[in-house]
Length: 39
Image (cartoon, rainbow, N blue to C red; front, side, top):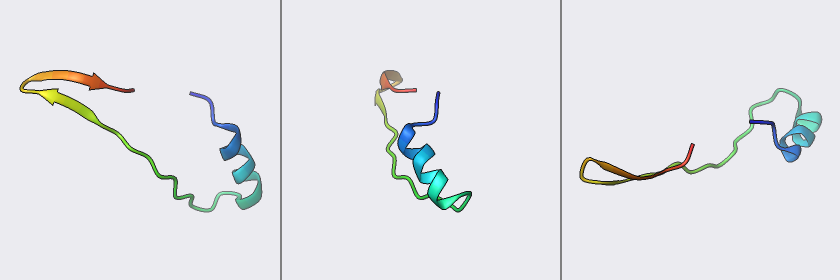
C-alpha cells in the first residue's frame, strides 16, 4: 500500500516526529460468521 500524498507532504514538514492519525477498524459478526471485513 503506497503512502498517501498528504502524509508525504506532512513528513516533509515535520520530519520523523510522532504523527497522530485517526483511524477506524471494524469486523461485523453474526454468531460465528464474519459478515464484513476490510483489509
